[in-house]
Length: 365
Image (cartoon, rainbow, N blue to C red):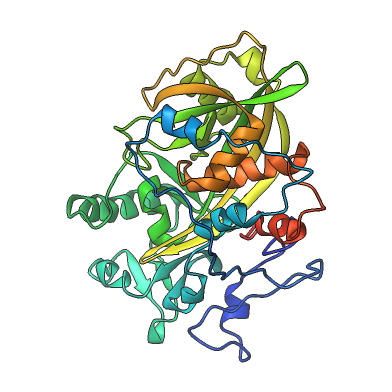
């Protein structure tokens, strides 16, 4: 990642050295970091269509009618607003304390949320003065930690403190290539400020020199972001599966794409963001793929998570992102990245580089 927190390497030593101000978060940069973290705190005047899970495809097409001309489009405000919506609340970092396993910071927990963990003193341990949270030292093996924490999450889920339990495990680790210390229920990940990873596929078609994107509308039965627009294929990266394996699995489940076709997807980089919403600290990295599909391909959802699909000109998709709140927030980042790479956003537009940097505002480790 070119900027933001790409080279961010928080460690226990840096947090609790004599130079650190406990208990606020301190960040140590590696020598390869060329610029300070980019925080975006803007008040934007652009007006967008209010978010509503009940909007229809007709509403989508009504809002993308206006011609989008990249060579004449100088207003990137609508795009910048979508980036801001994915990076809320960073001024509240000091309200969180590190979650530490084997002297590695794996997440951040809100001080207010710790009251639910203190009841489980045989599982969670708090440092003197409450500077950080860790697990009981008797829990040494990953499977022991997984079972112990799962017990806590089940209780908190039954009480409604952690809603939307999915019975899907996420690895708990300080960075993407590090070994997992244990696994944690996906719905609980933001409450522990874990690093999260996902794949997003831009499924596109070329006809007569024009690019079109396949867009999905999420099922109203989804527990998260019901009824909003989404990519053709997207999914979180669970424990015990590689990125490529997850790509093939999600392609099959979400759009009926065969492995032969899914294997043609091209890895084109990643976007990242950090979002704080009360007790939840989301720190996600989204691996982006471009998949050119046959002109006669028609997606067919297999897992019930997508209500319907539409094939829309990329230029019109850009308008929907700019002018409405119809897309799931994180999808907007991936689409904006696609617009950069395919020439729909150009350097002539004021704010071009600011917008480009902002797509990688999170910790990219």
